[in-house]
Length: 210
Image (cartoon, rainbow, N blue to C red):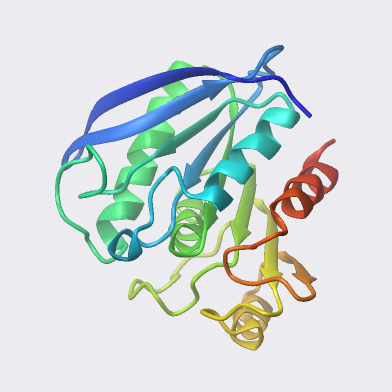
């Protein structure tokens, strides 16, 4: 496992106000790639400090990759109001450009959990992300239709005991896409990966390491 990453707390002025973010740079950072991570639904206590989001970040740090987590509109110190996914995608795309300036030449990875997984997928369809990672994506929770599909290499991880998002619905949605993700179904795993966060972290490192 990796050593603790260097942390930089940020307040950025995005397209609709202040965005609270946390940039973490692990020791021996591989600056050729950078990961932007989206959190669960803001109206259901989702924040950038969510345990699954934290696990996503730790897995990326295990691979030496810097990460940027952030709070959606109206969460924590981020200003504004929940925008049903549309504004959240806009903020994600804005942060992607901010990361390109901070890490010139770096390949962009987008990741997200639950609601954040769908935001990341919608954002990936509108930018040239190299990798997309969606954990238990909240299929059907965002009104915005995926008019374009992500061209990125795409990993989707889902528990078959998810009490919020039916695994069959996720499989049907993923299978309906022309550019289908690699889908990994974890038996007995719930939506919030209770007791399985270490398993998730190891799986992500195994699947995503070059």
